[in-house]
Length: 66
Image 1 (cartoon, helix red, strand yellow):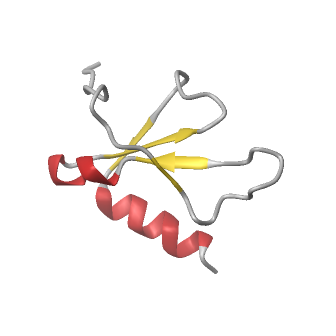
Image 2 (cartoon, one colour):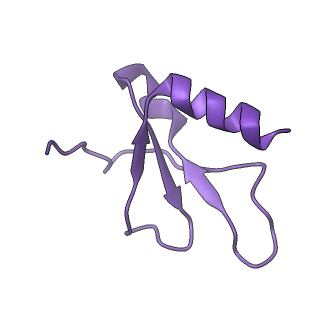
């Protein structure tokens, strides 16, 4: 399994995340040109990170916006 350097990722909180209860998703769109959009739970910033293809992230955002 390969690793991806996230040390310089610029994390943004999703506008679809709830402000109450800490239910927040963060993503690092600045890495999309490298072929991935990292996604994580803001409550666990050192926890697991999903590495999604930009097209998959776009599909996820479109689904969440419904």
